[in-house]
Length: 211
Image (cartoon, rainbow, N blue to C red; front, side, top):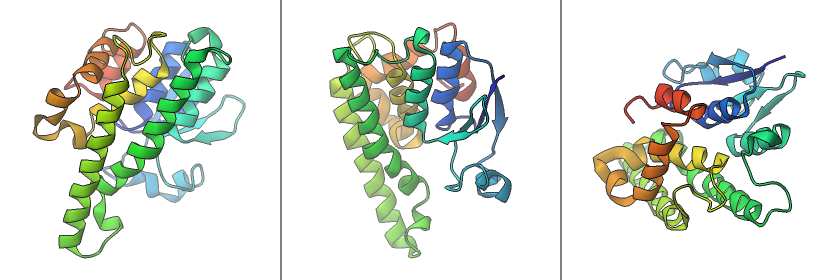
């Protein structure tokens, strides 16, 4: 039985798909187009009432959501993949710390920066909100950048945290006006290394063909 991953290219579905690939787990990718607002359709909301991607249907049937939670779940279900340090390993505390940091401090700001009109009707105020959210994302990504051990985020080695951090660096708020290339060199090096991995690499290149 296979996993079914619902998502769109270039979204949070990337790191979940890459984790599935690294684990060698069979899966099917079902596209939910954000451009067509398919994430708001009743059929998808029946799977994930929040109307957000990704959503992962487990082989035994239930739906699981929330990107960071899915990465931890896949690491637990496929320990041989070494997606995260094992429970009891001191490195696990740092892996969970930074997964939670990105999930709590960066991810919510992305929706505000991308869709400020969901929060404010006034166009002028929405523009200010958009900029403030972008600046907050960049500030928090600098905190993550400073924590990178190199060549991977953790000195322990490659982990699902690398998939997560590199994904954020490819989104508009970090990418625009060349900010990422100047300010996130260590996370940029992680992204370049991901593109070369035999399992995650093809997934990376499909979701982020521009590099």
